[in-house]
Length: 251
Image (cartoon, rainbow, N blue to C red):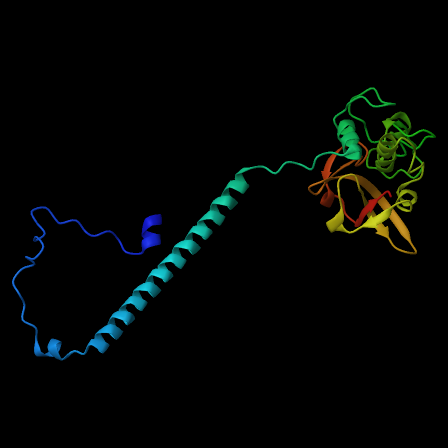
């Protein structure tokens, strides 16, 4: 195929079975030229040949362009098909997301001997970060009676506080709730969000802040969070919680 595209003209056809090419000088009986052929001028013949060659070259160029375009399109289709078959790996964990993944997987951590960590309203807000018994003050969960005071675990902001404490080596977010935490952070455009940022829900304005949930962003539209009473620390889609308020980063 490459040779045909480069030279343009196909190789000469082989004689069919039973046929022979006449030897040189024996091309068959002579043919008498017609009066019209004798009258043709050399200039007109040269122009006709040039026009014929130009048409042939134009056709050959058009054919080459068609083949190149077809090959490029085929390559694009094959590349897209191959990409669809190869799974895209998750973003590599940094220190924050690595700790969050370990907690979600139930691995041992300072202050926790391993296993899934249950949600506990107000859990994680003792003097030291980490799982703790919660409180029933302000509890609005569906499970009744409130189990927080007898459940050692974390709520959403308690999880974020503990993960950041383990990652930074100090209590950078403090004991407060999500409203208090978001004030310590800087809003990041969604296009610039990266694993380890915190994603908040509610309303975060210049004059008023009213948030109700936070998760640790781990990339690919997902977060690790303590979702609600009756669940353990887990991975959810960022879009699974209503009231998205934005991504925030500790600087």
